[in-house]
Image (cartoon, rainbow, N blue to C red):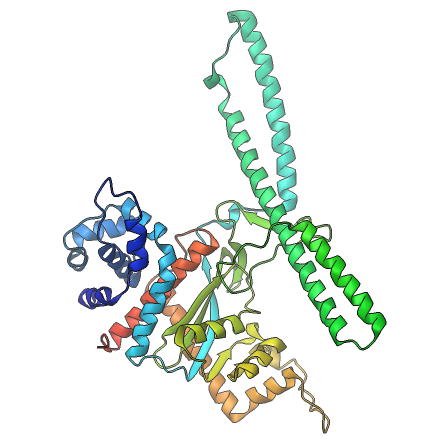
Amino acid sequence: MVYFLLDVLAELDLHEIEGKIQAKDPRGTRPYSPRMMLGLLIYGYCLGVRSSRRLERLSYEDVAVRVLTGGQHPDHSRISAFRREHQGAFRGLFLQVLRLCQKAGLVKLGHVSIDGTKLQANASKHKAMSYARMEKQEQRLEAEIERMLEEAERADQEEDARFGVGQKEEDLPKELRRREDRLARLRAAKAELEAEARQSRAQKLREQAARARRTAEASPDETVVKRSRTRARKLADRAQALQEDPPEAKATQLPRHRVRVRPDATPHPKAQRNFTDSDSRLMESRGAFLQGYNCQTAVDEKVQVIVAADLTNQAPDSGNLLPMVHQVEANCGSLPEVVSADCGYWSPEAAEGCETLGTDGYIATQRERDKRRSQPCTEPEEGEEPSPLAAMQRRLQSEKGRALYARRKVIVEPVFGQIKEARGIRRFLLRGLESATAEWQLICCTHNLLKIFRHGAGLPA
């Protein structure tokens, strides 16, 4: 594996990483080779070893790692800093390795299956707090700090009367400093949650304004047109008043989690924010709750190469299908012939989007356990167009549809098993949506490298 990886590293274009290193002040310690550092990270992720301390130890104990590093022993802090500083290059790295898979003939784009898995963030779910509890905790801490300040003032007056005037700064009680720090962190998290709520409310108002404009364009009634245009203008003004700054650029093309918000743009009492990783969200996975992210993958049928990878902090998969299909096209240069996905991705817009793109979509409309309780879809009357739901159900019930959809679970599900079980990658090391997305790209990149290596394809000439 290590000799194969050395050949791969020689083929990779690392101008983005090297340019960032060259832009630094040349004075100071001599940097390690970026190819060696990247190779050490990739080899560790291939083995499921991601801890910078364990990688440093392997540079002394593991013969393969010593060959890879050329007898050098980078410190764990240097390894961690390299991963953190150059995470922006992981997206390009994923694309380069995907190109190698294509040249090796491992990607056909005949049938691509899309699915998501929940991966734990580098944060505890017990460090999340609802907006209602934040307000209660803020009041409690303010009362405790006020009480402790009164006690400290009373003690100071007694000591001044006994020993004379004067008190050192270090005489401030540790409990008071600790509570002041907690109150500051609480207020910062509360302010961020309120700002996110305003942004969520502004986005909802913009969507309502867009619907009103579409109504005005489609209606032949002049009264409806005027009313809709007035409503659209008022909604847009309200959205502008809530969010004066333009929305920040997304780190991902997938839909993001929206904070639960009241009509007055204040957070809902149950809206939560995590103090350790504020971008992560509480999600349900196999009957349990975890603080994490929803990792999306599109997997090619031939040898289970990942052809698109992205990440979102929105728990449901709804709304992720079309962005992932577009990402497959952007990564591979063409659309897949067939796309399959489970019922979490179903929506009429997803089915119509696949049809518009010219890709055969096979999206489950309900879970298997719900099919027995559901009513059969009624046939449309003669001359009537079937609804998107009825059309998809008939497509799935056809002989071809059953055969294609049966392949979905054997295409994409084993990939999650190989990542989580075989390599033991069950949580992120980096925090924040952008950083976690970069790490997911690196995880998927190493998955594809292992596919090239294990299928004996070798590097294309």
